[in-house]
Image 1 (spheres, rainbow, N blue to C red):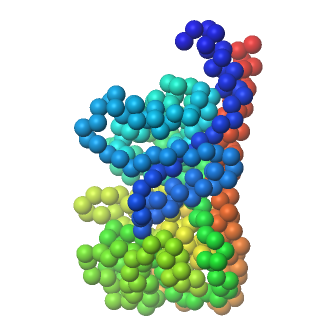
Image 2 (image 1 turned 90 degrees about the horizontal axis):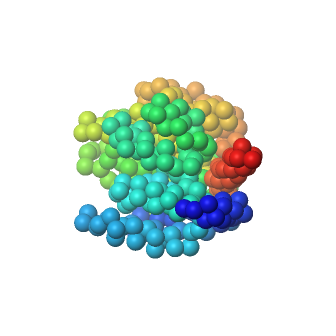
Image 3 (image 1 turned 180 degrees about the vertical axis):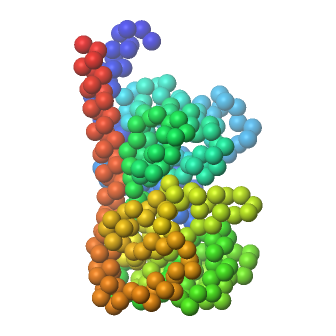
Length: 358
C-alpha cells in the first residue's frame, strides 16, 4: 500500500461509523446456541449495528480461494475502518473463523471477537485459538476469570467483560409471579447432565431438554423438549433454577469450564425471574453473590438442607430482587454496555495512536 492509499485508509478509519454484527443463519433449533447469537444480533442492531449474515455451511473439500471468495461475498458491504463484531464461534469449522478474521483485517476492518464459547478453555490442547484471539483488535469475554485464564495462555489482546448473556423475552412471556416455592427446575442438555441420574434428593426437580440415554433419578420429573418460545411458557416461574455440570468420562471438562464461562441457562432462569443455584467455584457465582440472586453450594448433597433453611421472608425478598434484575437481561443491557465499551476503547486507542504519530 503506497503512502497516499495509506493516508486515505487512515482517514476512512477516523470517520467511519459503520458497525457490523455477525448473525448466524441456521434452521430451527431447540438449544441455546441460536437463541444466544440471535439475541446479541438483535440487541446490537438496536444500537446501530448492521447484520452480517453467515450461513452454517461446512464443506471439507472447499478450497482456500473458494472460501476467500465466499467471505468476500458475505462482507461485500464492509469497508476499511468499519467495526465488525464477530460472534465466535460460528461453528463453520475453525478454518472459516481464522480466514474470516484474517481477511477482514487485511481489508482494514477492525475485528472484535465476542466469545460465546472457547475450546481452549474447555480443552487446553486447542492452542490454535490463542493465535486467533491475538489477531483480533479486541475480545468480549465472560468476565474477569475468563480474561485471567486467557492471559495465562498467552492471549494479549485487549478485553471487555460481558458477565452474563442477555435473554430477550417479551413482557407477555414473563408472568408477574411473586411467590417462590422450594422446588427446582433444570433446562438444558440432559445427556451431559449426569448429575440427574443420581438425583434422589427430597427436593424435586423438573427437567426440560432432549431426553438422555440414561435413567433419571427417582425425584426427577421429566417434562420433555420444547422450542425456545414454548419452553418460556412451559417452565415454572415460581421456583429455583439450577446450573450444574459434571466432567464426563468420555471427554468434556464441563465442570472445569464453568470456572470461566457464563452458562446461557443462567440468563434464561434470571430473565424468567427464577433465583439460581450454582457451584461455588463457577465464574457466575460472583455476580450471583454480589446482587443476591440465589445461592452457591459446594455439592448437590447440600440441596435439601439449603431448601429447608430458606425462610418465607427470604424467598419473598429473593424473588423481588431477581424480578427486578431480570429487566437488565430482557432489555439487553449487558450486551449494549459491552458493545459501547468496545467502541469507546477502540476510538480512544486510535486517538492515542494519532497523537503519537505527530
